[in-house]
Image 1 (cartoon, helix red, strand yellow):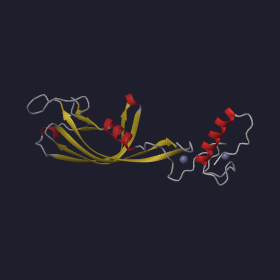
Image 2 (cartoon, protein in one colour; image 1 turned 135 degrees about the vertical axis):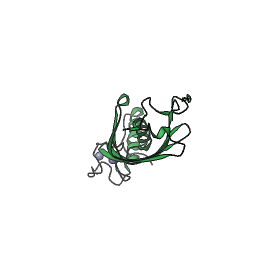
Image 3 (tube, helix red, strand yellow; image 1 turned 90 degrees about the horizontal axis):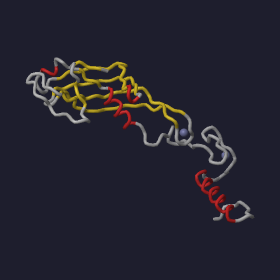
Length: 185
Ligand SMILES: [Zn+2]
Ligand SMILES: [Zn+2]
């Protein structure tokens, strides 16, 4: 989504505009990123450029659960304040120093929200993808999705301990030829 700030850029510090993005597309082709944003955007003329304050709902992101490996959708809401630096002041012609990390207003007075949305979406995604807090995951022995039913592999046993027990069993089996398979207490 490109916003033209040619007029606002010539106004005094503190001048502002309000927009509402209604299913506007944003994309960062180099990163293979595409999204659709909805929500209010406020622009305020700052000393170095334009301060953007946004509160946006994005399309849900498709993730795969780390526990049960099922696909699920994660709703994303992002809020941010970011200053878009104007590299050359429109009234004085004075060149403003910019860092590589700065968001900037381009030479034709457009401000592009795409990269900011991409970065804030990335930080809004969970570190661990879990489809729901009580996801029971897969049985480590037979692979049954335990959200869909039990498998009878380890009745009355916590599956995480069952996985450890079977690992311990395999390690012991490496040492001894004869083994009854029962985990030791
Ligand atoms: Zn899951
Ligand atoms: Zn099982």
